[in-house]
Amino acid sequence: MPVISPIGRRSLHIRIVLITMYVLLTLGAVTMVYPFLLMISGSFKSEVDTESLNIVPAYWFDDEILYRKYLEARYVTVDRTEPVHHRAYGSWENVEPPEGPGQE
Image (cartoon, rainbow, N blue to C red):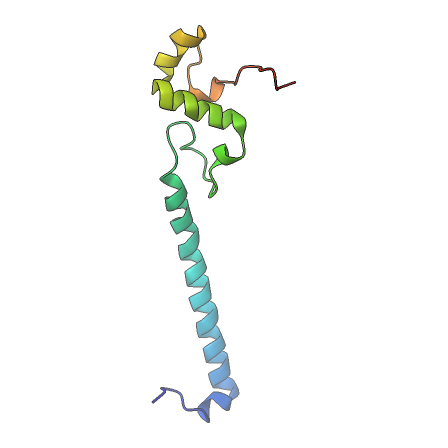
């Protein structure tokens, strides 16, 4: 047995109440989806890209960030990367991929 009878749903006042309830529920659902997607994308992040608040990880589309993540996975810290590359980076943001034969 419904709370609002089918005859009561025909009144303008009840329709406005129902529309308001659906709008509020939809807004509540949308405000829960964005933090959930941020939490999921945060599980794929590391020290290289923790400061970006993108839902889609940047290394999926940017080869420079992918190279930084590769170096981080291989050497763990910037301090261990610098002696191998013979450069002082200071942070992962200063690392640039080398020029290769396929790049112009």
